[in-house]
Length: 365
Ligand code: TXA
Ligand code: MG
Image (cartoon, rainbow, N blue to C red; front, side):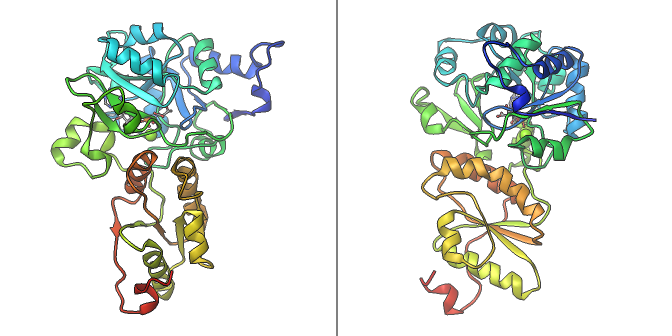
């Protein structure tokens, strides 16, 4: 049985103090159980980071490969110094600017961090989330929370309590429902353990925003490309299949995307498939009456990002047999968006119309 604490049961008002359900959740954490909780990025599946048996339950519940390290979530600077070494001025100024928020900072770990949390690595990724329920849960539990995204391994990350329930119902004891996640893509993972700072995973804080503090910032090639065998070994989390809907998904790239999307859709119908398109509002209008799941305006890529994981789950629920998605410029919020979309599609892309039919090759659409 999984208890879902509703938003009304989790309302904090100053007169009555913390809600009962939050005390219950914190007690479960202290007892070594798992609790799913909202963050501003995606829902996390939390366990007491200091308890190796509790953390092992996370890997089991998710079906997660044990070589993929977990992020540790904190609510105070003291918790950080207990977990990480080498917190220098550079790290402190980033934390001051971006915490609480969607930035994970990787530094050498202390002995307080169990091996199971970092998958044996000598570094630890730490972040302070900004969602009030996440912070309240960490404070009330009295320990940092190791927490990956609360999806079954390989599935799109959950941005609602319902999505967590779909994946984890009956498997974990409790879910805190804090509504939809505002950022909707996971944190940016920034490795500060080497000489050159490196973004290992683009996310809620853009590379451009980090560059203001880190002019020498590098971005790992895995941001937009599948990993080579050598890179796989260095970056465990990025090698596993991720975010994938159950039906085949292909991303349309290049010029005149609307024409290509229209062609792919109509061609799929001819072959007896039931296609669906993942597009912006603007493209959906042009492609009407073809069936589109829309993500928002092309002028607001943060909004488009926040809708992506829900839409990837929506593809599975749509009854479609094949899906095609619009692509985005890889700047600002677009980099994290394309990172997730490319992984969801298994890096399948198409950029041409395989026909001489002028309906598709002209500029009509
Ligand atoms: O926004 C987020 O980051 C969410 C919420 C719940 O905080 N969490 C999340 O966790 O996305 P997860 O486990 O789904 O992804 C963690 C990523 C993985 O790619 C993992 O390999 C990387 O962070 N990571 C964690 N610790 C690391 C370390 N010490 N060195 C390198 N990469 C690390
Ligand atoms: Mg994840």
